[in-house]
Image 1: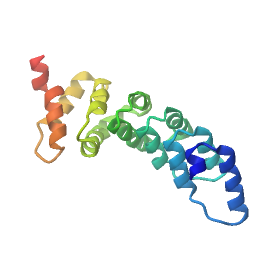
Image 2: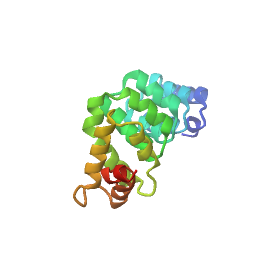
Image 3: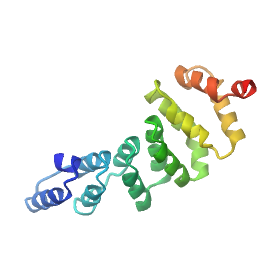
Image 4: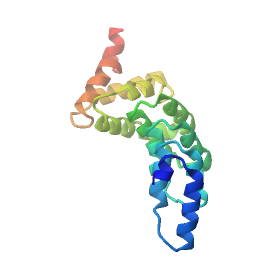
Length: 185
């Protein structure tokens, strides 16, 4: 794991060859998560091509959460499912990774954003009730690609029944993203 963490791609390659030659099991999917978390793109490629890693959602989310743009872009170019991109957007939003948020918004089809915008905001609200900078950036980036629809959506969330979203997210939306806020402006 240390070789993947520190981006020692040549060492990772040698270790993969040794374990395969000896019939030993190595958890390449876990190693891929570590390499993705630390933005070691060459090691990511090695683990996939030589180690035959098959689980990409966790590594994509780790890279998005940590702002590892080269790794996120590598997975996007490789062909992630739209749902995986929505999960990555949630991870990036929860840790205020604005470059990743911007990049992913360009890749996710609008119908997916329309379908999963509630889930994205709800998940971020539950995961990070102490900071909504990423949510603010996401909404400022015109999440629904229509300012009126974005405000209507956030107002609907902010004024919805108790328990649908966290109290902290509700207060945040009421303060900055509701019709009442627009009228105060």
